[in-house]
Picture 1 (cartoon, rainbow, N blue to C red):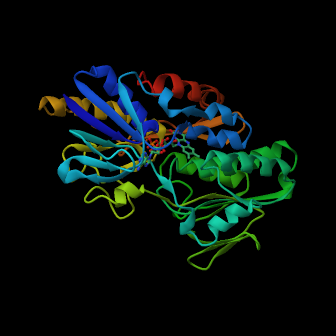
Picture 2 (cartoon, protein in one colour):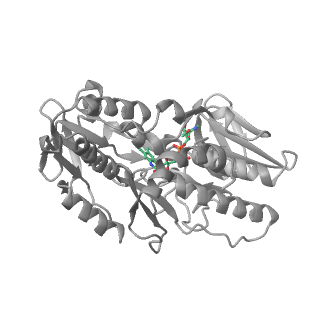
Picture 3 (cartoon, rainbow, N blue to C red):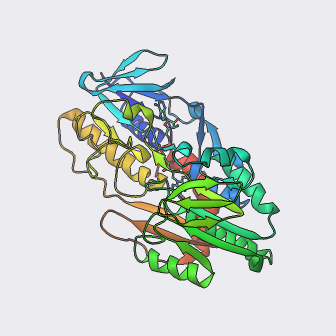
Length: 385
Ligand SMILES: Cc1cc2nc3c(=O)[nH]c(=O)nc-3n(C[C@H](O)[C@H](O)[C@H](O)COP(=O)(O)OP(=O)(O)OC[C@H]3O[C@@H](n4cnc5c(N)ncnc54)[C@H](O)[C@@H]3O)c2cc1C
């Protein structure tokens, strides 16, 4: 009997494990998941919570309820991967040997990497993030109370989860104030460390046009070095300053400690180094990466993970039979961008090309706001779509 150990029971860990369970009975393949948290969050709706479009209680479920019968869930922290000896060292449960290891540890938010950011967030006054659920709730409440001022959405560094989310926030904030009749009392600014709002065409041109027509200012090539919440100033490494009354910050992201703590598994930032098509570790033939944890040069999204889970199951099945699979991950992701109330544009692309046109529509809004969450809980996590 073969044993597959999966580290992480988030979107990637669940989608992969449930799909794999459908292929093999527990008598043939043992699947063991190591997950330190008791709760699973549906992160793509954090943005919706900020604008009162979803209820936080809909976004949390116990991790243990998400896995199919026959999958062993161990609530523990994976501390180190010993790739040379095929074992994972855990915090409380000792060492776990594997035949195949799937790393699905996601991304960590690094609030302490930008000077003053942690303190500014703790002050709970004018700096918030919607990259976790508590932050999204606080930002929602703050926005509700505002009747004027400068709202800034700032990305500290790339890569981040769902790179479109900070843009969705600023476009939706602008539209919210317009609908309240307060637009002329506000200024809206988006800062990015990149040279432009978005890199992919045709979405980049469309977003530029939206920002220009709605008076959302962009400050490009801006990498925040310091947040001063008392003065309401965001500084960058080049000496530029942006003033704010409300700052929505997207903090730097990095890989998990277990990756940094393990030899030959990840890069300097803690991302798992994998072949971008074959999903296998660049150093170990029986270690795979899925989801935000991996260094795939595409957007870190649940939509991408859904595709990756299918490919990974095919590849592992072939690997276990001593065969070679021709299933490959092509980098496909679909990112729904809320551009204003009742309008969403999908950015749909893979490593090589853009797949969908840059169109805002109400049907996309219905899909994003009303359908994707139930699809996630009921179909995607169960490997049915
Ligand atoms: C604000 C926001 C908006 C987003 N919008 C969208 C969107 O519109 N569309 C979209 O498709 N995606 C979106 N995403 C991205 C999407 O949510 C993520 O890409 C996806 O959930 C990541 O799944 P994952 O399994 O890689 O990581 P996660 O779901 O974060 O899971 C990682 C798991 O690993 C566990 N873990 C980590 N280290 C260890 C360890 N050492 N030992 C044990 N357990 C460990 C963690 O506890 C966690 O449960 C958004 C994300 C955010 C934050």
